[in-house]
Length: 87
Image 1 (cartoon, rainbow, N blue to C red):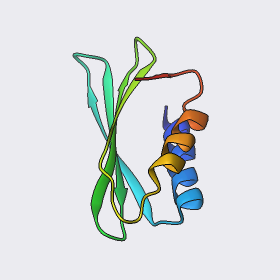
Image 2: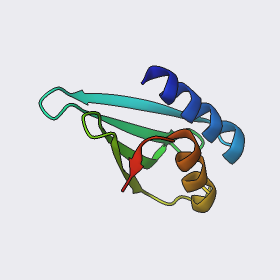
Image 3: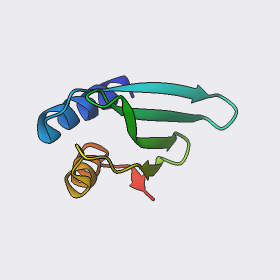
């Protein structure tokens, strides 16, 4: 998972041309990892990804900002999360 997250944030930085980072929370009860993608230029979360590890499913929640090209972000997610069902 760590390698996946590392590749994902690097693609976001390069392809969207922004300073960004991610923060993770793990919920052992649900076997879920929640990832918050931050736009460091405006210090706002632009995407939350809930990874359900047992099901290999990802539930994204988008928060459009001025710096984020949403179609490009969705394309990045589809490519980097290959093998995961994005709902």
